[in-house]
Length: 120
Image (tube, rainbow, N blue to C red; front, top):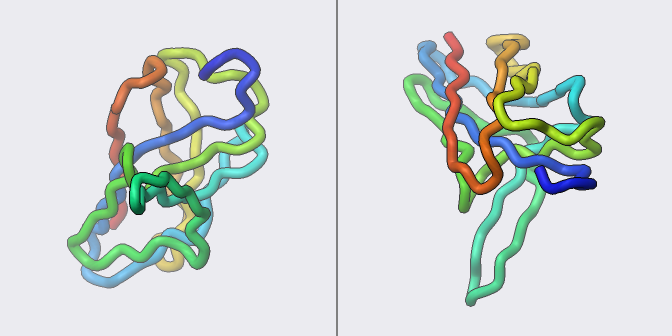
């Protein structure tokens, strides 16, 4: 994170290894005041970013990639700047699977790392 920044961006892959559909309904972390799913798109050369409301649907056997250029996590109100190599705890809450704790590794600025959270 740049010095003084209060927001961080996170990427991961959610895989539904179960037999029924599920929905990611919320994300929390002790490292930030709020964690939101955002979608970034470019239309006519103009980049827009918006918060995704209503959760993120996951079909059985499907996955949802949160990666640069599309869906991603915004960690808002970061309490202390993230340091490369640090692990950031996240609690992912799903309608059916309940709450799953994952750790996201902080990569160097500009890195395009990908971490996975598996659910059954």
